[in-house]
Amino acid sequence: MIEEAFGKQLTAEDVQEFMQMQTIEDCKQYMKVMLDFYYDVIMSLSGRKAASYIEDDRNLWLQTMFSKGCQFTSLLDGVGYIKNTSHLNPIIDFSILFTIARSIYESLIVFEILFVLPKTAEQQTIVYNLFMSHGLSERLKDLDDDVIEDYAERIQEEQNDIDECKRAIESTSLYKTLDKPAKATIDNALIGKKFRCVFRENNSIEFIHYEDAYKLLNVKENLFNNIYSLFSLHGHPSYLSLIQFRDAFIDEYRADKDMAKHATQCILSFMSIFIVDYMKLNTEVKDMYDKLEKPRKFAIGMYEDAMRGENKFK
Image (cartoon, rainbow, N blue to C red; front, side, top):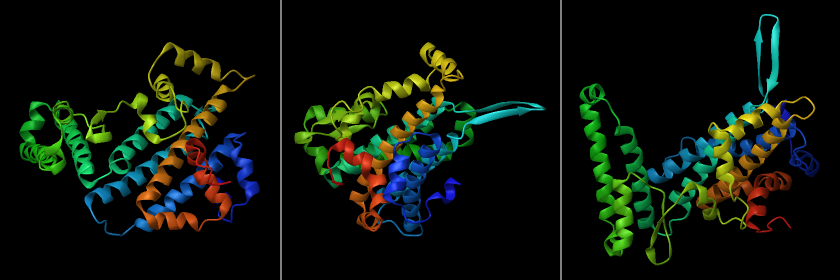
């Protein structure tokens, strides 16, 4: 069973075997190694009081990444169907896998924007309050009259929270010293309910689109070009996704399994980058990682290292 496969020390031979991802079983084993470390980190943080609400949310973000990874792994077994004496053999719906991959990619991008890229506390105050304002505003929009009437007090509290986000941003020394274009970007983000803004040189501000957001990850050039388009292709109904689904289950060539392997590589890439960057924010987690046996450390950090060209494992 995968759950018990690597409770022992992980050897270089183990890693070499499953890293090739020749089979779905290899994919599951690699995901299990990654998820094991996420789980250990989450358990180490359990019951500890965070130093701030931002740190608390950062730790919660780790849990969401773990949850998505677990859901993805469970789907690698495929889903069959039984009715009376007939049945369908399990198939892997790779469009669902790529949808989860897109969700993990977006989570990684926003994690970087909120927790990794800000160079000062005030930069983080601004981007984080944009993030909170966006979330609260999304919950309030399109409420029908009955809901507004029944939950008037709660809705007012949330509107007050949105107003407080704006005040928190405008009260920073950084906001007060920004030039007009930078202030306009923030003000428009608040009005337009956007939040994916990053500070550039000289405190200029840029709104980030998911299609180009991979550039924030500091990976090798062109490595993730068109990755978001691929996810969207499989996440939304299109003629190409329809015929790919049809062709994936031809007996002579089960393309669904190749697609699943590719989706797994994407997930492992994002989770590797995430956990390495998370360790930069929490030295205790980095200490946990450093105490792992070398093959396990390599399996967890390999994708991040390869994509950023850091050569830590030479």
